[in-house]
Amino acid sequence: MVKTVRGHERRVHTMLRSLPGTKAMYILFGGDFDILMDAQVEGLLALNGLIEKVREMEGVITTRTILTHDLKGRGLPGMEVC
Image (cartoon, rainbow, N blue to C red):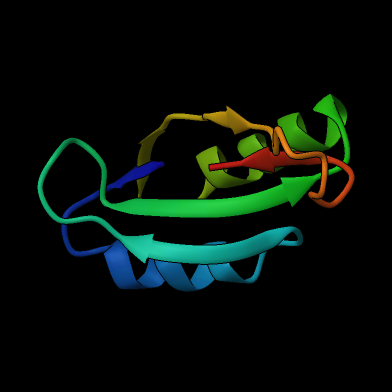
């Protein structure tokens, strides 16, 4: 999840969408965050790199990372990041 500077939501959304591993993007209404980014990466090094890129973007205030896993075992290899 990404919190943006007011008025920067569209620009940040566009930049996030272009990052490798991005699967889906959602605009959030209400709450502390503005954008939900669903991404898939291969391991913790890739996750750290992705988080660093997002946090360095102009207009990003803060992020929150939530890791998920497909319990059915049918998901793609790697880490699901929301």
